[in-house]
Image 1: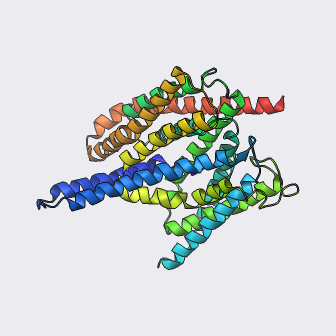
Image 2 (image 1 turned 180 degrees about the vertical axis):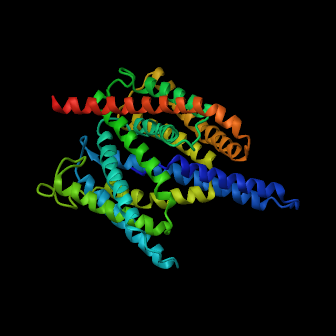
Length: 393
């Protein structure tokens, strides 16, 4: 599974787009030619289609690569191969550039944490695809950006969390309850254990995104060097998972060869889609905007739900369909309306010199932050406790 992009990354994307819009508005020279506009529109359409196809195909290939509900290949070895490919690609881009600044040791170990978290989450995601449909996994993961924003706001006083974000979180949660409630997907019921592991996976993604946003993005070395640190350690962690058998396949090096099962066409699709996922995401952030990402997420999820129904025998009633629709629309609204509102609030705080007004509302804001943090901590604690009790018994 591709790593989730943090709220800070989406905010940077929107800020760049808004800066470009302001620049265009300040330009008083009006050209009669519509060619640049058409070219920009076409580029966005291509970016939208690429993101939908590559991300959707990536998840779908994982499901199609299963044989009789199991992975015939080792999932950890597959991720290790893609990490090696991405490492060589990043190394080539690094040596093609001019920057040669070496990272501090503290940054290297920071990426150790991220690499371990991504390795664990990749195996969890592939295990979840044994228990639920591709569309449901995609829709469940849509909770990550909102939880990331809530976690950052509860931990850091300089972060903002506006009312629109809270409204989106509540509505999306209701939609997920409608989708994942017992009896909503007859024929392929989702077990409480699978749901708990999904929520745990979302929690790992959330904390990784927060860590990445607040610590790693402050680094003073090139992006390619940072990617090399991430992918090299990711390769090591996935090799360890392959050897130990701690993976979605459930087999280690002693019982399964590294390249066993790679003759399956869909396994090659998994390798290719995961290897080039980063390039597609980077292109979308460069040529697209938040609206493109919001539309792509909703389109991808709806398409995967259709594949679940036609290819994998999932049956959804009207309540689960309405729940899926609520999640898609709320995800789009969050990316296109809530995050811009958050950015606007941040800008207003920077321009506001009336310190008395800020101090007057600080205590109330801190109480809300602490309440939000307590709610998140309690929720994560319940999930972990359930998993511990389940396996202990």
